[in-house]
Image (cartoon, rainbow, N blue to C red; front, side):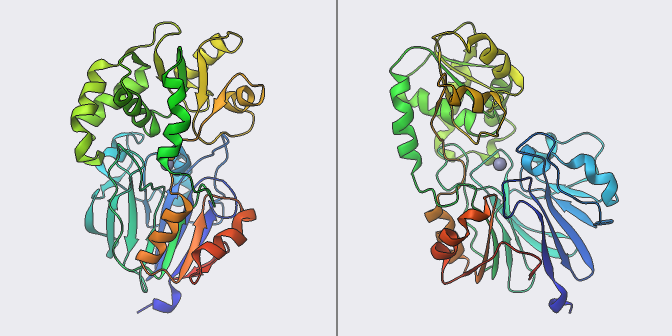
Length: 363
Ligand SMILES: [Zn+2]
């Protein structure tokens, strides 16, 4: 009845790399999608003039999607919808409401369909039955060897799509080809996110035949959760390998074996201390595999030649993002989580769909 008034506001996360934060206005209700921080620590969406919201819906538990929860008080402390796995990692005391990891439910009377995003434990994409359909992919990957991915199937005239890698198009197989030489050498340290590509990379080294895999406490906890409480996010075909990995992995004890430790950029956690210890040593080899924000240990060690960079795909390649937009029959694509400088390349790739990085967008 209010179809003409349904809009999507791009608060943060479109036009430049920044925290995810979007607001859907429909039928007099206002839903926020994600409320992140970073990647640079402390970078928060500007919510000063938004006023109270009716709900916050979370796609997954990564910091750039949930790290801004301290702003909830400014938004009237709305209920927070999240999958059980994501909810477990949220601060205690939030008014959390359940979101299925796969299936159809209702948020404020709006039909919402979710599916596993192939990216992180508990992570989902979200389809809203608003207008001719609206899809928010959050972060997703079609290539994960560990996390299950279910392609969205419902039509969505408007699609807000993870384009973190812009026009990058290498496969995860090519990523492993670049990483594999390190499996044949001496000790190796991989600073990783424990609730993302960390367990996935460990699994690949196990399958290669390395049994000397060593992990920090965060990775150890993540591996155990993937085998117990987080199985809903795991691909059915990795069950045995994952259990073998959880049993095989030992604590990190000196520079030996394939070591995986959080955090990914070395600013906190066990990897921070290990990098400080080994920055001026010849061993172990150090490989970073994800986005590196300026002024982080990752950035510094890659620039000074001490560490290598080998990307490990956890976001869609351009071909995957384009295929998804075509599959849901998107008429308008809003590329998220990349810089505006990629606009022309993305507009060309998504054609005939129209591409925009400017809100508000009519739903
Ligand atoms: Zn993520």
